[in-house]
Image 1: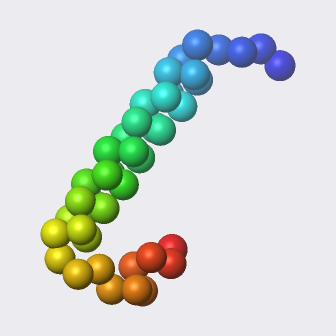
Image 2: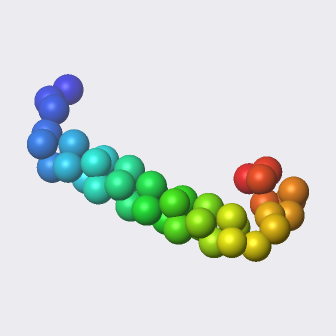
Image 3: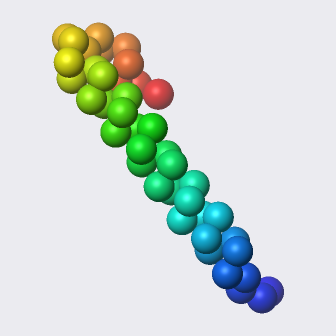
Length: 41
């Protein structure tokens, strides 16, 4: 199997995007009292 740089870049972008979404979601939850149901995913 060959390693491609686009795949690596795509993975990095995906991880960063997920991190941004998760961070925004957590910040929104921290502003209001977080229900226990949202902790389980």
